[in-house]
Length: 118
Image (cartoon, rainbow, N blue to C red; front, side, top):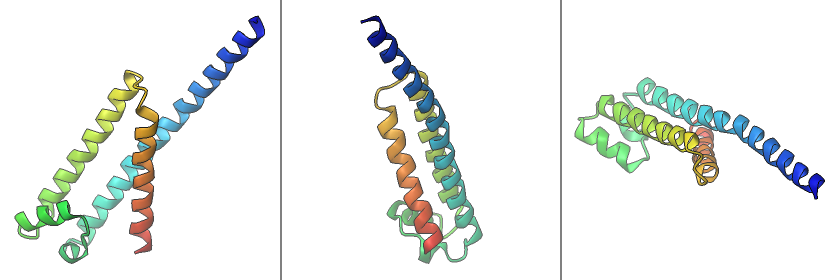
């Protein structure tokens, strides 16, 4: 019985340590892809109105008369909100943290593939 408990504790500690490594990696992926996407928006400012596929992005460009300033600010604010929420969830050890972070990092990875392949 004592060995079973010790093994369970060791497995839990090992799993927690592994998660401590994955969470920062996911945060870096989310932030890096968002920053890269923002860089592309600024870099291709003159073509962004025709290239943007996100309806919200198109709307922001439309209300700003084709200028990317509003779009970039809203995009960066959204990224900061997401990262702050994830950090809050990390601090309070929210049980939904792993699936939420994994989903966002996966979506960002797909976005990166789309941005580089297009």
